[in-house]
Length: 513
Image (cartoon, rainbow, N blue to C red; front, side, top):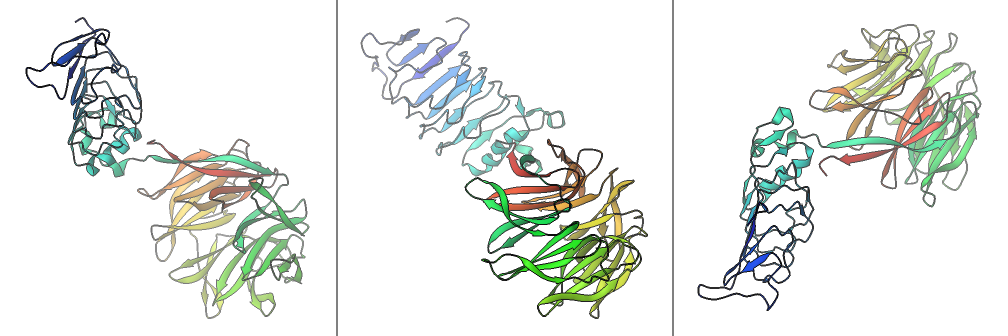
């Protein structure tokens, strides 16, 4: 019948000695019809005149290159379908839709490198599937197949992988779906907030997520909320704070407090008594101790909220301020004369700890004991550290240490000390900030001289691996990062000292789709 091969149709309802004939004059073009079969040469489509009670269909070396969705809707009674030794360029999802009685399916030797995810949807009666002889690329595109095979009551002949090289010749049924890394994430630009900022904090007030930016050149703490109509962030309120370096929010029921730490003194606490009121100055904060604040953090001690403000002046001192009546008042001076640049509150061994980074010595770790912070130890091998941030993963406590000169570092707590784990080149870095976004433990290393780099913690190795660079637009002197979930979407805020604040949206990508 020529090089195109044959299409052999065995028709149901035709017994020995009986004759099946298509309607008069309608034997399909290119076919010869006999009493119990039809032979067709190289036809890619099922002719309309074939009986809808067809049970078996064999398409071997037909030259068919495409199988589109619903290709077999005219023969819903098929029990057996052999589609072998062809060369497909396209197989669509639901190509076998409507074959609710199909039991045996053969797609062997068809030069298939992958299969669409929903190819077998609705085929509940399958007892055997033959996929052997295909050069499958065993990457994320076959993950769905590996997950599907154990769920069906059918024997599946899969054959071996043709690639990638590391898996070549390995049998598909020996692959472990858990070893496939088929989920990726991406941070893409979403919105720009015009003024530069030194700090950014996310908080929730009255059930709504908010963000507050410390904008020293604009002289304010700017509070942003979500505009559900415009589907973007908008200004809700601002409070006057010239030369502000940190705006730290605290929510206590209906009350909102914002600590505005300002260079050259004048740090203030602002308060909003209720949701229908505006923020107003409540008190000046330790004017004789906080001369040049550089950072502020919130922590809870003995059930009470406290702020710790790191002071970078020679004459001032880092100060712990705790709630007492309507305001917050100095509870303890820490680390005087050491020009502290950063404070980080964390919990170790079930107790509150405080880590202070300084321009004059290695970071010092304090622990809460007897109603005050006592020095516990310093951090070895950590000279010239500008700031520290911690995160937890798999029961361990990790520390990200920012260094402007030299490599920034990752350390892990071993029960008595933070030990070096990883070094990352970081010339010009002022921030190395860990963030847990959805299921991903990220860490962002901001730089004044290069693109800011996003890392993701690889659980199997316990190390940070490069994920992507942030931009475009590029960040100009980033100083802080924060993330917020709004209307089911996740956003990353990047506060920049020499450029506008940029907002990125977090996307999850399924590489097996």
